[in-house]
Amino acid sequence: MSVLYVASDQPGAGKTSLCSAFALLLRRQGQRVAVFKPFADSGSDPDATAYRDLLDQDTDGWPISFGSELFADSVAQASGALSVVSGQADHVIVEAAGAMSAQDTTKLADAFDAKVVVVAGYRPALTASDLSPWTDSLNGRLSGVIVNGVSRYAGHSVTEDLVPSLAEAGMTHLGSIPEDRTLLGASVGQLAAHLGGRFVVDDPDTSMLVERCQVGGMGLDPSKLRFGAETNNAIIVRGDRPDIQMSALSVPVTCLVLTNGIDPIEYVKYEAERVNVPVMVVDSDTIATMDALAGLVEGASFDHPRKLVRFADLVEQHVDLAAITAALDGDGQSKRLS
Image (tube, rainbow, N blue to C red):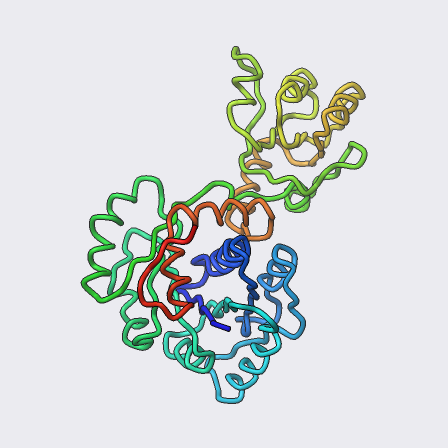
């Protein structure tokens, strides 16, 4: 049994996404993989729930709250929990707590005899020196660095500036993952909860993922161009505009959000139920509703099966997974897996 420890230089860099994607990809290759997060920054942590729901991982008893310092008894407790989680697994992927330092990460990596991957959330000011504490502390346990969430027009800068500086600092660059709209999405149910919406159709599918929100207004273009140009979108439209609502329902949309507290007419309800499009009504006007959606994007979490599949695809395309599995297998040479 081998252990991969995934740490980050700052909270929110993408550790949960990366651990989940690694687990899914290795399972696709026939490997038996367990995922484990021994410590959390607070008592309630959504990551264990994500592992349970997305990967069917038993999460009983972990994570436990992490204080400002990692003590020897905490390390022993985590090692005991790791033995239980590992079971018959070929590999265990361990996620670090968001606020854990390089020194505490090294303590756990030594206790687990783990290889370490550090995921760095992309920002324009990111340099190799920001990650040097990990190199200095982990010594030979550091397999490499992954840069996550690279914006569309920053790829050249990462390739030409950041990656060479990582190499000069003695760090292996395992890949750079671009940002992706799917990962910022929310389910229809989460959208309704955030906006205080009430559903006005029978048996709405609240699990569908919304990636884009679009205001439904008058236009000269046909509905296919106005509402069908993007996929997985929610249409925000006044409740007293059945003409625009019907236009939106004529193309594939994920849901309708009707504003100003006005319920749809019966024909709109009938058509929405016929094409299986959830319809919710909110009390706020259209502008206030769109403003409120900004908070939903900022608080996006990794909690949907489509996000897992999409991120696994990105990892497969942009990360040297073969190098990571080679390190886990004790092979210093990267070998491409079929």
